[in-house]
Image (cartoon, rainbow, N blue to C red; front, top):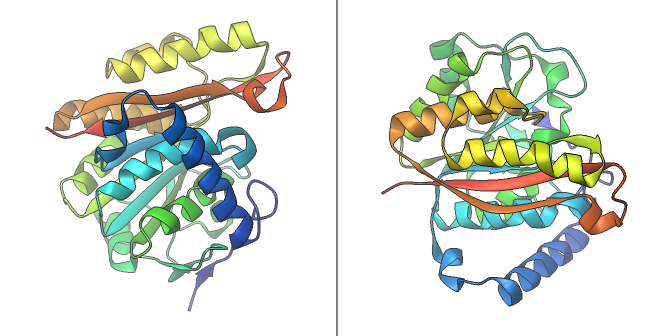
Length: 267
């Protein structure tokens, strides 16, 4: 049995279930005490964009999206994120049996993983799957969709035009959800970061893939662009959920990283 073991537990997020649960409870307490429209928390989505930094910095932003994804009660979730550690030609699809998290293992949908590889000409590159952009999403999925199966997709030198049809095909199944992982700008002062990030936010809110190329510096821009193309073709409505920077947690405004979460709603 192939297990996708945790690679960044204890670094990007706690290694203990108790600490993770405490963080999630804190995120939800803050959310519920400050949300302007409580009805938002009842909404359902099967496609989200989420950040992938350490939970201390971006966990609150990611939590909102994962909570709405959980409302959909999908049976499987495909997590798509950029490779940070190794060069990847195209996209690697994880052919594992289990995905380890501190909250308990998630079963991998091997049938779906194999079908993606065969249908879209992708491959399994084991070295690509020590990746934090996808791994940090898995405890959220275990929390909000405890019975779901998962598939991990890690891309490198990939075309959004090639990735978009995969997302469309996945979302054609009402039992499948998609998580697109990205952070925004990296290590600018907060004013410049907000200017650059506003381009990304506007592109998402308008479903405008071309605008991403006018200054958006998201590390997962390929996945975001693919999602926007798919959303336009499927008639999904974008909804920005949260935006903040690392300065909200650290207080350091001289070199910040931007974080966004968004959901794509069906009629």
